[in-house]
Length: 108
Length: 114
Image (tube, rainbow over the protein chains, first blue to last red):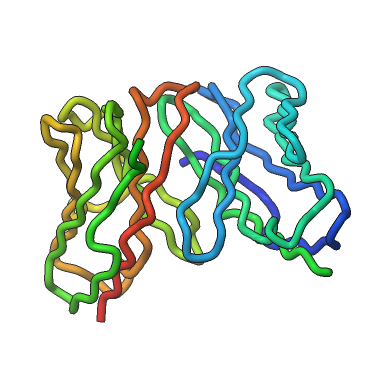
């Protein structure tokens, strides 16, 4: 299978900035997705990258380096509601491969 | 537009039984994928159906099977249930599933095997 690596858990303070890293396999790669999943709920789409660089969407940004097999999700001005798991998923050989998710705890 | 729906939401079965889960994709979406989510393994891909054909398959035993109907609704079946099959089963739909095609997830079916 395709290995997707991301940290298991992170903690950050309300109002701060946090970066969640993800590494993936580059063979057959054709896209990188980030999803947010609140406890007990379905994952919801956050961002998509296929070219190198930064994609900004409000408080959330996602970066991709295809040559390094690396992506990160940047969350700014953290809010309590951002406490959730963040799933990195790569699209390789016409299949989606998900990481185990990074549980983000936002504290007051 | 209605989202992806899955039924039932919760299910309790015993070892050896079989189970069928249902997924109705967003209207107009033709690709349906199934995933198993467990705390230890994260989201693992089971299979993907497009136009009633299985296009991709993950690394799960033959006890896990699925199908898609002409209206794009999909079912997955697990036979001879094992304790380790306890998980959240998520279905996701997309228009055609390409690298640029966002997947939309349903709320999942929580299966508990006793």
